Amino acid sequence: MGSEDAAFYLSQVPGCYFFIGGRNEERGITAAHHNPRFDFDEEALVWGLAVLGEIAGRYLL
Image (cartoon, rainbow, N blue to C red; front, side):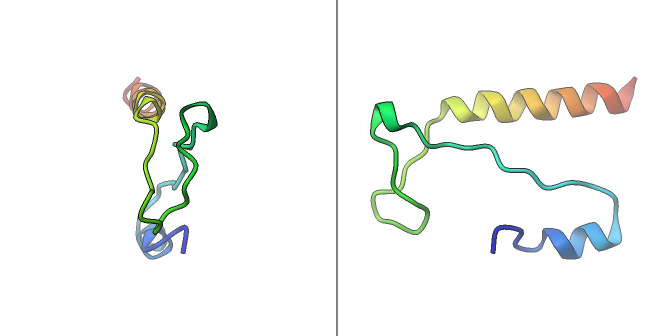
């Protein structure tokens, strides 16, 4: 399930659940989750941190 336990948590407290894509066809990173060749483009971490930073900044201001 894409949401795992998020639905339970979000029924208790406000929040959100979002996906940051980690596929990169140019680098050959295309295997799906639960595949022995699964990998993700670590550049996606930069985007995830940017989203979380923006959320924190808006919350704190």
